[in-house]
Amino acid sequence: MKIRMFFMLALLFAVIAGCESETKGGEESAENTTENTESAEATENAEAGGAYMVDVGQSVIKWTGSKTEEDDTHTGEIKLKDGKLEMDAEGNLTGGSFSIDMLSLINTDLEGGMKGDIETHLKSADFFDVDQFGTATFMIKEAKADAEAGGYMITGEMKVKDLSQEITFMAMVAEEGGKVQANADIELTQEDMGLQAFPAKIMLSVNLMANKG
Image 1 (tube, rainbow, N blue to C red):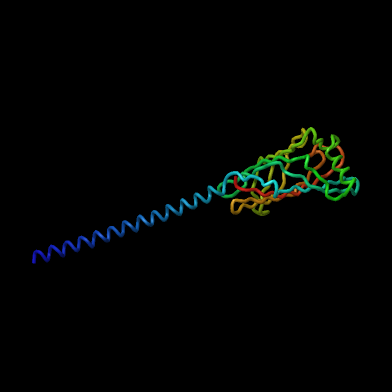
Image 2 (cartoon, rainbow, N blue to C red):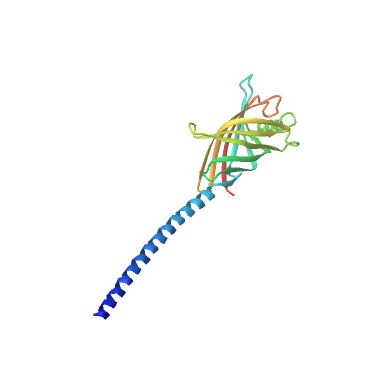
């Protein structure tokens, strides 16, 4: 009888110990799952933030210049030398800076000699003076999210030739899969660009593609 009772007690203790082990193992498994989930979320957020370098081959700035006193409009393109966009961990735009290659300026609405004439004229000292000022720059000072418009109100400092000017415009910015696409239409005056003659008004249509640095 004593032997039978001993085995029954031993079996009971074994069952209790097994239950405690399973409970502890389950708790540890749940804790590990939570920790892994939090770690994955932190990693994902970390990957969303940081610098995104502009792909100059996939980015373009189109310009439209016009005089105000007469119907005289021309179009063209200009390239970026380099640039970057800064994003926070939630994928919000926080800053950025860009260098524009003024020597790359071309006209797209004319052909032949007329095309060459206007390109030479715009690059001359009468206008952008690209031999002396081959690079224009823009630096974002503030990027304020506009929920109603679904974009950002950008304020930044633009420098063309030896003139620095603060400008503000709306931009649409989207981040996905380590890439950022940004689009903006910017209206400038001849004073903004440091010009005294044609064009009196310039519209810039900016399309940027950037990759996680």
